[in-house]
Image (cartoon, rainbow, N blue to C red; front, side, top):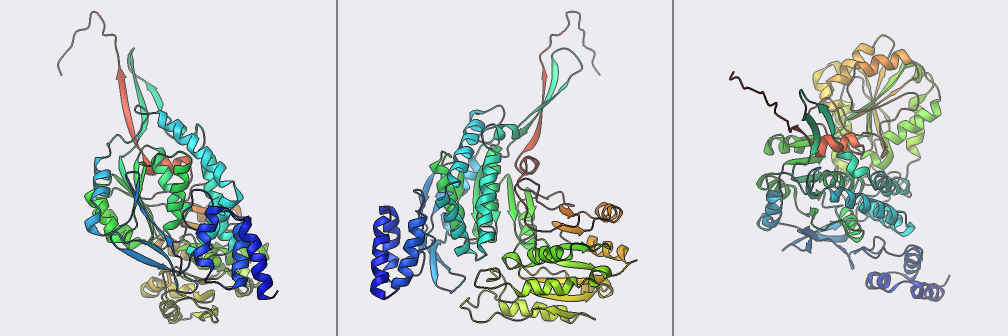
Length: 569
């Protein structure tokens, strides 16, 4: 089409847009080419902005950035200063968010500190709130079933932390299913009690689940919606008042989620939300005497929080996750595809990403590594099946690859080159899917082992070859790792499975020929094991473990026997 034709078509689309969509769009659109205007209004015409949304994920750019705001005590507010969030694909400023300073945290601290130890509700206080929250979840799930809402979240996620449409679209889907799971009476069932008969008439004991009071949620960049939304709501379900902080690069997503939850009836004072640097949130948790904090992120920060908060934490910390290919190869094409997904989907930026693949010699005969390399080579920036690495620069990424290649016997299996033909800013990484192959014998050396199991949060994995008779060494290596989040045991040999599963401890372990390490759905537990601080997500067991404690109430009503006589002891 000519420029004049494009403008004419764009104009017709403009007239179809709602007034609110037009206002959000008009300021930025005038700076675009007619072709881009046409594309944008067609997208927005098909997917109108939700009424509660305060940003347009398709329109955010340097001339019209999205604006984030803090939430405290039910009121939205700004901070004295702001910080810029850049577009990971081109480096342009696309969002401005509060840069809350230490001097501004007083209201958050007071709210956290003054929340009753008995919570906002519990089985004996304000039980009506269980019904309210179940109703809110039902309405929120219904809201998220709207195509424009599903699109809104998926597109916002894709702008904030670039990943393929399939990966981005999965987050609102899982979040909506979680809301469906905890609709109606399911919130009250989380607080289900049990009773045990006593020693005499009128006596019995009842166990109930009690909240902690003022609590915190701190989550990373990689799942801007699913992790903070589910953990924040889980804390609220059990009666806690939550202060949430997400990585400031992506927190806009959970801000929009809270606005949606308010729209469907969540009390605005149940959750506080703060944009800040990490140390500022740390100070809020310490000064506010956070009764429990759920942290998802790096092991270093997890250990600091554990110390600062005197152990009152639940952790889903770093995951250097392994997969073992057993002695019985089958469905090789599928296993290669799944291994590619586990290692490189969302550019390997999942705490459940496959970090080390143990390949039995029988799988090498089937060409498994070559098939994996072929699958990885098909990933492209065009569809974001490979994309920016948000926490590792290209230079740092390549330095780690070189360090691994210095291990005796190590070779580059595939990848190992920076991406070309892109505008990703230097602060982020842009590297091909990469694998380094290391002989299992080299991992006996403590220094080599330390390098090999260093988690690179990006499209990188270590491939380890092993042979018949070396399973004890494989198990020794697996159990020497510091993190035990997810794992995969790829085999249908039941005796092999039983032996490996019985001698390892990873919290979420997939077993069988279709085993994976990543992609946990909402219906099963996801979390580490082997650590009393280990937290989880999704299931009733995870919610009760993280967000409540056991309380025993012993009722003893009598009657006291008429001929009773007490004896001192």
